[in-house]
Amino acid sequence: MSKVYTDAKAALAGVLKDGMTIMAGGFGLCGVAETLVEAIREAGVKDLTVISNNAGVDGIHLGKLLETRQIKKMISSYVGENKLFAQQYLSGELELEFNPQGTLAERIRAGGAGIPAFFTATGVGTLVSEGKEIREFPNDPHFKGRKYVMETGLWADVALVHAWKGDTEGNLVYRKTARNFNPMMATAATVTIAEVEHLFPAGEIDPDNIHTPGIYVKRIVHVPNAPKRIENRTTRPHPAPQH
Amino acid sequence: MAWSREEMAARAAKELKDGFYVNLGIGIPTLVSNFIPAGMSVQLQSENGMMGMGPFPYEGEEDPDLINAGKQTVTELPTTSYFSSADSFAMIRGGHIDLSILGAMQVAQNGDLANWMIPGKMVKGMGGAMDLVAGVKKVVVVMEHEAKGESKLLKACTLPLTGAGVVDMVVTDLGVFSIDRTGREPMRLLELAPGVTLEEITSKTEADFVSAL
Image (tube, rainbow over all chains, first blue to last red):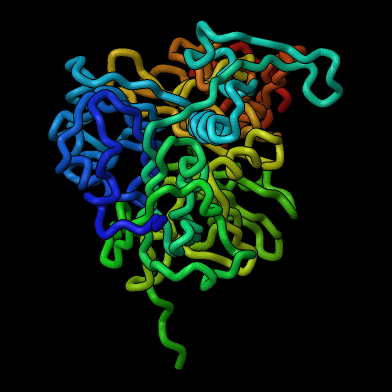
């Protein structure tokens, strides 16, 4: 059974439905599955809950699903770069659940590892911990003396991840800081779909260097010309030539 | 003469020690990287998944796959490693990072910190700030002493908290304060910026503090 699909539309066929929960990898616009998200826009499914650290920027990536009002709820840690998001949120069209970034990452990791809940010090004494179970561990030599809040694991119907290299078995390798949320999201969904910049036959990627084992990846699509965008281009001047 | 942004960053940089792993927030804290003493090994963590963050790239050498937590293009160093967001926050929440330097809207004398949300205004989100202040060994806030003529150093924060009892030190344009997270000791004034008097800083500080000058 081949995991390789001809394009993003084919890779999403049969898994999309209104009201579903989708995880979308990436940090800002770095390491995002933009081709797969574009195919979701074209498919037109709506009332989506999207779990993603950020919400894209206006007109790009998840920003496009906001334009078409396909997103009902976002679970994110930071959504600062999106005016349309602010509008829809303030008008009550869009639900928003903020999670501390590390809590979001760990909730996804836990979900993928079959862990329904865990305790963390992050957010104790803030709005984030309101209404949640607080525990202390006074008998533990390492964890005694602090309060911890219970957070739950996350699971999605579909996870959309972006990798640098992939093979026909679904093994994935990410590049530099484009790794971010992709490896955890790959483990925490019923169907994980990966778009890869370079697709190889199984056996061509050194098994010691694989970040996501293929067991987690159900479908894979080759995107040799995926857009790569820079949100904040920052540079320094070249050093003056030596005479 | 109150301290400039650069001088505040330079003062915060005195908290760096050889061998430290450090996370710097956006704004004045980012400037601290310009004041790492020569010969001192300080590795900068970027919470999107990088340890050993290098300077901005030369023009034409930007890599869209290599950014910091402010989404700015950066470079790698011989010490660099990359990891997932879960590993990055395991590092932060597990107490492996020595120092976090970040900005604030308000700090209270008991170490409470508010820097992510103003009710009624559009909230951008807390990002990694709640994880950093809950997990990093030492937390230093660098901020202007006042905003629109109001003290930002308070008896109690009025804005929603980022963390409760999490700040160890505050560097403002007027001086430096230490805070005992356990609340056993009062907030202490450690230093004044040049030309700033005890009377001036006292009149501009709502929080209670004792002078250790």
